Image 1 (cartoon, rainbow, N blue to C red):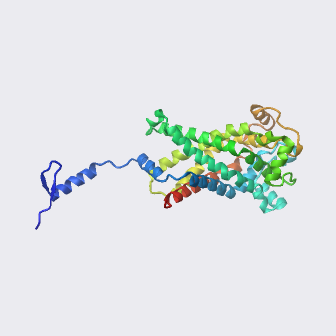
Image 2 (cartoon, one colour):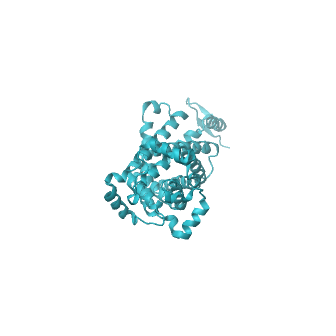
Image 3 (spheres, rainbow, N blue to C red):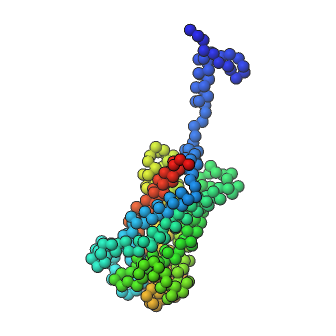
Length: 346
């Protein structure tokens, strides 16, 4: 039999069995990648271009909003309860009764009233939101103090929280007039004042001036910054922990579950600001007199005095019904499309 030989690192001759043992020893000693390194490698491999990333974010937002449009409309109707006497009919709110009223009085399609403007708003909003989030993350990670502590959980949390808040504010400012029009279209009941997106924009400018398109912007920015910051932070934390414990689980399932939980956390924390925002947006509709003649804090005080502290959480139940699938679908669709686009041949 022929003897198998090889060269040692010092130039000597070694037999084949010694070489095999040496290689096995080297493989055993070589450290396997940590869960954090594995996740970073996965994220790097999933990098996509600007246009695909914008498309992934926009499609995810539009698809999610279309799926949850009926619950979104119910949330808005409950939020404005008590603002005017004629909508005080919902003094003892019941989601099922209100859903039946909409179906009987306005027809089944009315559950998607304002959904076209929702999609027109959500496509650019979510696209800008996710894209800005990725850019702000890169910017924050380039800061020396954060870059030098890249393995720190606290540094990661800071990047996700600050990046999420800044991306939310950026997206909200860029698309706010469409958000206001969406709210007014969805809040219409039997009396129709606005006939579509273009008519609503023209009417608001005519009746309330160009500034009318930005009513409630202050409350929006105060709410959307913390809301998106909490949402992204909780999502990234849950997803990272899940993947480190169960790396073989489906990305779709992980994104859906973690997104749903992050939506609950962010909605609970920022719902009162969202309610005030909705009510400020609806002031002056159809030439009505102003209801809240004070700033943001004064509006909070007025609601607490007239409706109690619970008034700040009016509509929270349909909000939960909406946000659990809604945010989960957004993250699930975004991650799926990102993977799809990254796997395409260049």
